[in-house]
Length: 267
Image 1 (tube, rainbow, N blue to C red):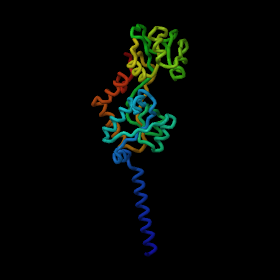
Image 2 (tube, one colour; image 1 turned 180 degrees about the vertical axis):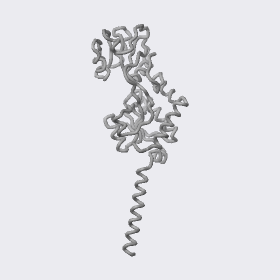
Image 3 (cartoon, rainbow, N blue to C red; image 1 turned 45 degrees about the vertical axis):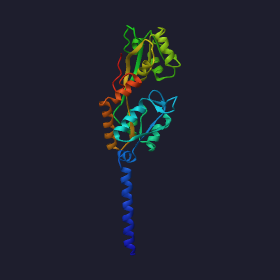
Image 4 (cartoon, rainbow, N blue to C red; image 1 turned 135 degrees about the vertical axis):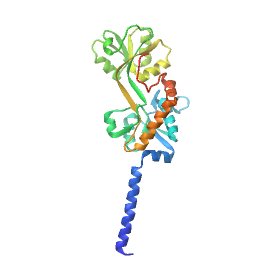
């Protein structure tokens, strides 16, 4: 074969392979999800009530497991779950080990530099818990000066409360202990994340209610790798659809007793 013709043919094959490679690398995530028939979802698997293993069956369950199943169904695929530690979950997404993370990932400016996000699916903030018969209005931490406030030891809520001079901050091993003291009148209020407030109040028979939200509202979304506009549009449509048909609200009320897609409010 003529040397020039051979070089031309080889160059043509090389260009075709390069174009094919670029096409595959540039293919939108939606195409690979549809092609495989699966949505690969990462979560911690030990974060109740959001995602955890049922102690009886060992199966993954929780609010975000339900949400993942609902979203996958709207996309026409099946969810495949991967459990991983929080410390490496975003790095795993960047490395392409899974398609999305559904694990209470806050939408922050810093994270948006590395990943794209769905529209928010939960909204939360710090929130007070008070007795059902409480007549005093605690609308901020400043209103608790001179009062006893219970919260979990070592939490960011402890730092937030101790930053306000005059609050008698009482720390506890966990929510059961401070809720019992609150119900008994030994403290005036408690503080936790609004999503967990909904969950623990739904799970207890104590005479308590959600008090005022405190501080800024955090938006929680579903991160995925950048450069996938078709997937982003499809995921947001699926999220809008499960909110519109009531299935998202049903899952939310099942686990929290409230619609967690709405801003926190006092009861």
